[in-house]
Length: 129
Image (tube, rainbow, N blue to C red):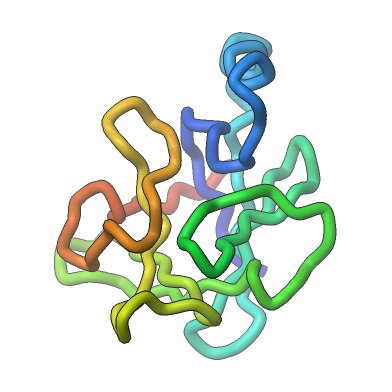
């Protein structure tokens, strides 16, 4: 099993705007994500509170999936600065990997506009007890 990641941005789950605001204020546990290894270097990210998997479609859009599919697999890489990046295992855009990233408001950033060196694509896993 992988280590859970703490995030204050439940927008990764693809929730509508009204539900996003409600989830942010209910409790901090709503943003806990569990990372599980499925193969060497490949992980699946699941929201603990809702049970949704984080997935990316062929256009690089993040969405929440109730079922585990190949769209839910991400390649995990530990960068030189100690942070992790997550690229879609299935989808690429013009030969470039599409990364899971957040915009300045904490919402999902389109995968086709992300690169490994963007700080918005760097995440720091934290063990939650």
